[in-house]
Structures are given as C-alpha cells and as structure tokens.
Image (tube, rainbow over all chains, first blue to last red; front, side, top):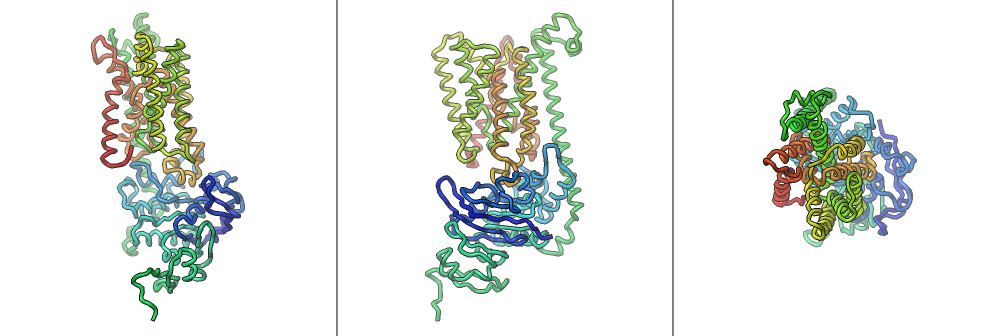
Length: 269
Length: 356
C-alpha cells in the first residue's frame, strides 16, 4: 500500500529574480510518511514547497521525482503522481462543490477521453474521505472556511496521487477544524500510504502529526528527523529566536513547546 | 467525528459514485436544454429578419426562396439583402459572446471583455486612420481592423505580464490602453472632413447596414477555424480558473494554454469587429446572461456564444424596425442594453467592496 515514489531536492537554490531565498538545499521526503516543514516567516518553507511541486523553477540544482528531473518530465505525467494544494487557493464564482472536486481529475483526462465511471468513483471516494458528499450540489461561495478547506483537500485527493504537498492547509481555520484537517490527512496517510509534506505554522501540532520534521531558517535546513529526536529548547531558540521550555505533550507524548516571554513566567525556584 | 452517527449515514463508495453520476447527468441535461432554447431563439431571430422589412414576406415564401424557388424579386430581397445581413449578425454575436466568455473566465473578472480592455479600440485605432488617411476599404479594411485588435491585445498582455498574468492588473492596463487608443481615434475624427467622419462614426457605433456576402465570408471562415480551436483550448479552462499554482499542480501548461485561449479570444473579437465595427457590450453582457441561465456551470462558453448570437440578431432587428424610416446602428441597441449592466456591476462592486 505504501507509496514507493521518491521526491528529492539536490543542491537546490531558489529565489525570485536576483534574490536568493533558498541556497544549495538537499532533501528527501521519506516515502509513505508525513513530513512537516516549520520555520519562521520568510524562511523559504513555502518557496521550497512550491519548488518541490515544480511551481517554481530552481535557480540551480534540481528536484527529482523517482529520480527524474521534475522540470524535464511532462507536467501531466508529474500530476499523475504528485499533487499540490497551494496556500489559500481561489475558487471561481458560483462553482458547485462536485464540479470543483471533479477538476482534480484533470490530469487523468486526455484530449479525447471524457468523463468516465472511474472519475465518478475517484471523486466519490475523495468526497467521502473528506465528508463533503452532502455538500455536492452546494455553491462553494456559501460554505464555511472549514468546509471549504475540506472541499479543496477533496479536489487534491480526487487527483489520486501518491505524493501530496500542502502549503499551510490549516491557515484561517479555527483550532477544531485544524485538528479535523490534520486527522483527515493522517487517515489518508495510514489508509493509502500517501506520502505527505505540509507546511505548518503551529509547532505543537507539527510535532504531534509529523513523522519527519524539517526545521528551516533563512533558506537552509537547521535540523530534520522525528520530532522527538530533534525538538529541544535550543533548536527552538536557534530557529525561531524564542525562549521556550520543551515538555512531553500530555496527549501524545511528542515534544510540546511552551513559549517563554518576558511576562507571566514563574522564575525557576 | 462522532463515530456512530456517521457510520450509520455514510453511504458506500458505489452509492456515492452513483449519486454523483446522477447529479452530473442532471446538470448536463440542464446544459443541453439551455443550449437548445438559445438555439431556437437564434433561429427565430433569423427567420423573423428574413420575413420582415419594407417588403414583408410570408414564412412560406421565404422558405421556398431559400430552397431555390420564388420569383426573382423575392430572391434578391431574401438571398442578397436579408440573409447575409442576418447571418452576419448571428456570427458577429457568436464571436463576441465566445470571446467575452473566455476573457471573463480566464481573467476571473466580469469587466474583462474585449470591448473593455482595449481590443476593440485597437481595431478602431487601426481601421479609422486606414480608411480616412489611406482610403483603405472592403476586405483590406477588415484585415487592418483585425491586425489592430491583435496588436492591442498583445500590447496589453505584454504590459500586464509580470512573472505571470493577474486579471485585475490586465483589466486596468487594458482600460488605460483602450482609452488612449480611443482618444487617437477622436483626434483623427476632429481633423477629418464631415462626410468621412460620418461614415467612420457609423462604423464605430457598430453597424450592419449595407453589409452583405463580401463581409460575411471572411468572418465565416475565421469563426469556423477559431471557434473549434477555442473550444478545444478550453479543455484547460477548468484547471486554469483555479489560479496558476493549482492549475500547474493539476498538470496544465499554464502559460501556453492561457496564451492559446487569449489569442483565440482576441482574434474572435478582432474578426467580429472587422466585419461590423465594435458592436458595444455584446462580449461584455452575453457571458453573464449565459452564466445566469446556467448557475454553477463554470464558464458556459457555448451558451455565451449562442446568447451573443441571439442578442445581436434581435438587436439588429430592433435597430432596423423599431423606428419608422430610420435604421439605428446595431451597436446603439446593444449599448442601450449593456450600459445599464456596466453601471450596475460597478455600483455593486463598490458596495461589496471588491474591485471589479
């Protein structure tokens, strides 16, 4: 069941115009696992995700999908293996849910191959997994933020790829919907072995849901590995410039970062 | 998740697929029905324009004449005068409607249509000096208008390109370019003889007066090539409408697919303008009418094109017969319909606070 596809970056340098944001970065996503990228604003984590999804051509170096340069592989072929959900995507006006999710089938349709039963089945499975089937004929405009995010994830699932990259899938969601989305992605990873890479802002959720955590700062990887092995107060300080205490999460046993500001902190006895 | 509740209600994958299939077929039937109704409206407009005029002809006579019968008089009236003009009206509307629908869907902006973003002004800015200063006429004038439309479209695209295309920016630049080109046309008009200015005015208003087979065939040829090309290119539209990142992730070749579609849409607006002048607001109002008829059906390209056909067909009928002894340019009639919609759109955009 587990995805055997590999996605790697080799000596990857990224930027916009003259400005280099990521330089000479090496990375391999562990197949069949959940990788979470964290780091302060403007550390290059979204840029890195965009490059891994071939949405941004590298200044130097390469991204390899199953050992092949992703920019030299026909883009539709890539889209059959690798899906991406960019940060806050935009839906056309008045589009209905089933139509939006169905657009995830685009890479599976050719010039002459029209909609088939397999497409209906893939869309149905995606909508069941994300619990949006009952919204099928509703307009996306009238959905709540949490419902809308589930619809977008359903669209990405309908693409039926073994590797899925998501840029801040929990942004703008309240805490319970953040957990819903992360639980849903974990289900997907456990049930279908999909390799996931996501950018997250919340360190504690990242520690809890990641099999593999990547901490980035100023365009380079400071540390990577299982959260329990790498997350320490000194790493948090190095990456975020934040004083903190790291204790075991009472729910999951994974590291929990308790930030320490200048106020409301009991001095150590 | 509350496990028990969802377990009880959760349909199986097969049931879910069947349910989606039913929904999809229902939507497709709706699409077919609306297209059929629009087609009937188009054919009605065609039939009425063949029958009405200074000499009213019964439907039966018109039918006989079309099949090769009838006397020489009715042959001349129907086949030489009315048929080319009526067909030209439908074709012009079709091209404008399709063009506008592509622009609006692709640029995600209801203001993005060739007459708003400078394509029609480009055609005018090429055709007016060509006819006034160099005495160009006929097919050559149509060709000049087409070149002007394509040049204006390409110019706006290049000016708006900044590591990709943003609909809002393209519309603003297009409005600016269009205004600039229109002022060139106005300047030329002030410098010209009254009779020249008058004929240029009629063309600028968008008119089918005196149009016949020589204007019809080039447009027909162009639409026969461009419309299928546009519909073929529109296969990428569902992906492109989701924004550049998502579209690229789905395997669309964003820049190429968008350029093909914008090129086709610009050319369609160009050939239509070349044949009848910049018939105002057809490209602008046809797509929203079609989308209103088919809510939630995406870009609805074909319905928008048919709406355009019906609109120009009916507008030209009204222009010819609404006032006794006066033929109004068709563009004047479409303007009467379109201008209030533009005002409403702008007023509403201000109120909901979303530009365009």
